[in-house]
Amino acid sequence: MNEPIFLNPVFQDRIWGGTKLKTLFGYEIPSDHTGECWAVSAHPNGQSTVKNGPFAGQKLGDLWASHQELFHSNSKVFPLLTKLLDASDDLSVQVHPDDAYAGEHENGELGKTECWYIVDAEPGAEIVYGHEATSKEQLVQYIEEGKWDELLTKIPVKAGDFFYVPSGTIHALGKGIVVLETQQSSDTTYRVYDYDRKDSAGNTRELHLEKAIDVTTIPQRYVPTQHETTRQGETEITTFVSNDFFTVQKWDVSGTSVFEASDKYRLFSALDGEGELKVGSLVYPVRKGDHFILPVGFGPYELTGKLQFIVSWE
Image (spheres, rainbow, N blue to C red):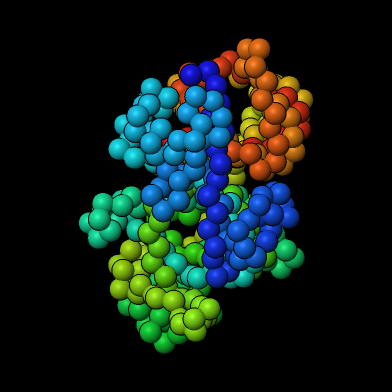
């Protein structure tokens, strides 16, 4: 199919959510505590639906199951999940399992390796990334004694930063941050610490300390990395990460660029600007907040305008 697959996202309320998905992207959000936009998702807990073309109205998971010619994948499930997160308050400190641990302990769910592109950050915003424990015994001691300031490593962030967060990494988004997250299609989270917050019913949220300690990587320190940048026509392409889980790039389009058909399906999330996607005689307007998939063999195509995308594939 030589037609892009535009998607309608699913929104999720969160205790730490806010309204920036509306103010930054113009989405109609369900509440003032909207924390997540599941933009490209076939996960059962929130599936995107196709917006256009012959598959309009179908859930992405159903499209994946019935039309593998669009994807040519060996994965049993749609392997990736693209989200926008509005951290209007601190997220819980958490850690995710790898595929093997999740497969054994979470009914066959995928593990969760993820990465963040910082879309927006208030002055002074920071994330939790990694910890200071040098052994499992020390990790357990810090947790049992509540020595969070000694255990957790905090890193200041700004718009444009990128962080790769493999499974086993203790992490948390801090207040005042909006991110585009690319992750394995998993909804398994082990909560380590939640600032003793209470929900609307006055209850603290469940912690998952035994499993969290099981899966946490030790030692664990954040190491900054450099990213390769290339050009394709009037598009600057920055490759953030490329491994067995996903490839994630930032495409900064300024003008017109021509791309050949690919043997990989690709996920596009427009983070800024507006322009057009052209294939043959067909023209599709694209603007900030749009999300679409280009199926296998799509193209050749042109991207025109002033646009910033996060582009990913398995």
